[in-house]
Length: 267
Image (tube, rainbow, N blue to C red; front, side):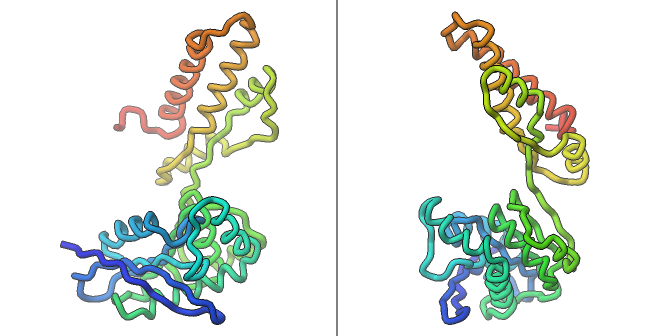
């Protein structure tokens, strides 16, 4: 039975202290594959540790990269944004901190790591970090991004990637007929676009397991309500205008299940 333990790994970059967190099975003997985890914009946190512990229980040594510094632990979105944006705007600095964390994963003495089996994964801002690290050419077998930001100042850096890349982005399709319907009846939904459904169907068939539909559903609801109220200006009963909204939700969800995700009758 695994005994997942979490330990601090403290080190310095340019005179500043960083405290990454290492999750590993203390009962295991011998090296295990090493995973560098880049957390979301909240940085090293209790939530990040729970994810790392869950992954470590599957037979990995996981290091949560501290990208902000030992004394920076955001408690809200404003603090997280203030810590994140300097790294988003300076990819060289971001990569320097990711590479330092990768070195710590390989060199720490708490848990043996098979350095021939290294990978990185991250969530949201962390997904961006993992992809950036892979673009530097470090010898990782895989880089995985969960709903990560995909902007890249220099796309040509992708040629440096040595391992496999899996991007689980989950974008909505943003059906344009509902964008138009919203705008026709007083909305101002400008420039909203998504991933075409034929591409989402292909992605679902290739193992992508997260496809967002929330934006599409909200558009369908809003468009239906706007249309109903415009065509029935005397109505004020929510039961009246929510009826077409509910129908729009049911139709959208059924369409996504049958025609996009390919998951009909597979529950």
